[in-house]
Amino acid sequence: MNRSTAQSEYRDEWYDAQCGGCLFWIALSGQLGQDYGACSNPGSPFDGRVRFEHDGCENFAGRADGSFG
Image (cartoon, rainbow, N blue to C red; front, side, top):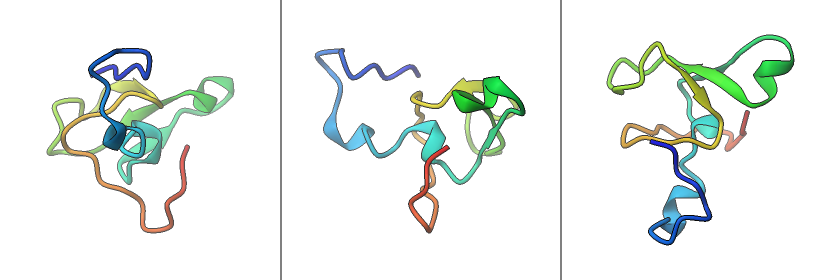
């Protein structure tokens, strides 16, 4: 699910539920890790897939400290 903020159907609650802020998002190493990471959520259809930090899914789990990236 690529949730572009430019889409007319974009919902405000999705802004804080992006992959980069998910407990299960693991940033890639090197320069790619600034924008891309792997999903490690076994409950997500994206488990084991590389995702853009601003993508999202229905299985988002926020980090306790609210960090991103």
